[in-house]
Image 1 (cartoon, rainbow over the protein chains, first blue to last red):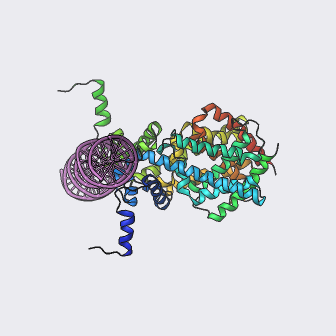
Image 2 (image 1 turned 90 degrees about the vertical axis):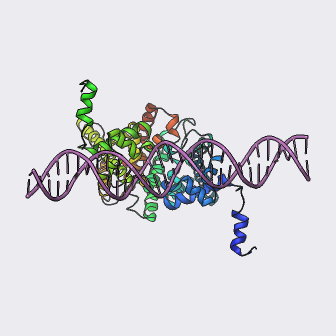
Image 3 (image 1 turned 45 degrees about the vertical axis):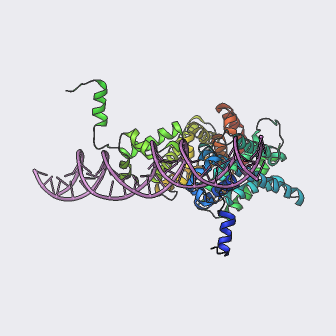
Amino acid sequence: MFTFNAKNTLMSTQKQRYHHGHLSESLLQAVDDISSQFGIEAVTLRACAKKVGVSPGAAFRHFQDKRALLTAFAARALNQLADTLDAAEEDARETGNDAFYSVGMAYLTFALENPALFRAMWREETIYSKDPDYLAAAKRLVGYLKEGFAGTITDEDPKSFSAHEMLAWSSVHGMANLFVDGPIAAEMKQDQKLELAKSVMGELKNACSQA
Amino acid sequence: MFTFNAKNTLMSTQKQRYHHGHLSESLLQAVDDISSQFGIEAVTLRACAKKVGVSPGAAFRHFQDKRALLTAFAARALNQLADTLDAAEEDARETGNDAFYSVGMAYLTFALENPALFRAMWREETIYSKDPDYLAAAKRLVGYLKEGFAGTITDEDPKSFSAHEMLAWSSVHGMANLFVDGPIAAEMKQDQKLELAKSVMGELKNACSQA
DNA sequence: ATCTTATGTAAACACTGTTCACATATAAAT
DNA sequence: ATTTATATGTGAACAGTGTTTACATAAGAT
C-alpha cells in the first residue's frame, strides 16, 4: 500500500504533519524568499502560507496581522544588518583596517545585495513602527552606529546626535537608498556603485575626522 | 418638484455631469489627498474614484494600471520637489544667501512637510520606474542637483557623479529618509530635526567646498 | 442631423486579508 | 493511562481590491 520512494519519504517527514512546528519562522523566511525574488509587493499572506504548505488562516495564530508579519520581518532584517556591521567591525579590528570605512561599506554592500530587505526595514507605512521588537532592533542599529560606526568620530554628546554622527549615517544611508531606489540605481552597475561609494567614504572620513 | 437649496445647486453643477472633464488630474489629486491624510497604503483605486465621484472602472480610461497612476503621481511629486528647489535657489540668489545651504534645506523641508509625497517618489516597487515621464522628472531632479545644488562644488566630470556631488546629495537625501522613516523620526520633533539639519549642512559644506 | 470617438457606468471575475466554527495534535492533570 | 485543556491548523465564508467587459452617454467631426 505504501511506496517508499524518496519523494514520499520527504513528504511524510516534512509535509504530512498537521502541526508545522516552526511556522512563524518559516513564514518569515517565506517573506524573505518571495520579497527577494519578486519584490515586496508580491508578498501576500496566502502566497506565504502556500509556500510553507499551510492554510491561509494558520498565519493568524502567530501574527495578529499581515502588518505584524511585515513588522517582524523588518525587525529581523534590521538585526541581520546589525549583525553584518558587527562582523565588519570585528574583521576590521583583526585585520587592522579602518573600521569607519569597513562598516560604512558593509552597510552599503548589505543594501545592494539585499535590496528587498533594505527596503522592508524602513517602510513605516507597512509596519507597526512602535512594536517593541522592531524598536529594539532599530535601537540596536542606532546604538551601534553611534558607538561603532561613529566611534572614530569625536562625540560631544552621547545622548543626541552630533552633526558629525548624523552626517556620517545620513550619507551612507542616503547613498544606499539612492543606489537601491533612486534614479542612479538603474544607470550604474554594482561595481561602479561600490567604486563611487569608496571615494565618497574617503571624503566623508575627512569631513568627520577633523576637529 | 425641485428644491433649489445650496446643496442641490452644488450637486447639479459639479456632480451631475456624465463626463468629468479633468479626471486624470483629479485622480492624481485624490492620490495626493488620501496618501497625505491616511498614508499611501490607504490609496486604493476605488477610494480615489469615489472621492472624485466616478465609478471604479473610469480610472482605466486614463491609466493602464494602478501602478501607472502611482507612477504619474511619483513623477508629479518629483516635479513639485524640483520646483521647490528652483524657488529656493532663486530666492537665495535674490537675497544673497548661500544657495548650497538654501537648496539643501529646501529639500529637507519638503520631505518633512510632505512625507507621503517624498515616500511615493522613490518607491521603485510600486511604480513603473522606466516610464518616460517619471524618468524625465527624475532626470530633471538629478540634473538640478548636479548643476544647482552641487553647483558650488568643484565638478571634475560633468557626466558622472563626483565624490563631492554624491556626498552632498546622499547626505541630504539620507537625512530626509531618516527623518521621515527612520528610527529617529518618532523621537525628534520637527524643529529639532531642522536644527540638526542646519548643523549637518554646515559640516557638509565644509567637506564639499575644500579642494 | 448623423457618425465616430472619447469617456463614463454596472456587473462580473479572480484574488486579497481576515474571521469563525470546527478538527487535530500536544501538554498538563488526574 | 486516560482524560482534560490548550495550542495550532483547516475550510468555508465575508467584504474589499484591481481589472475586464458589454453597454451607455457625451463631445466633436462630417
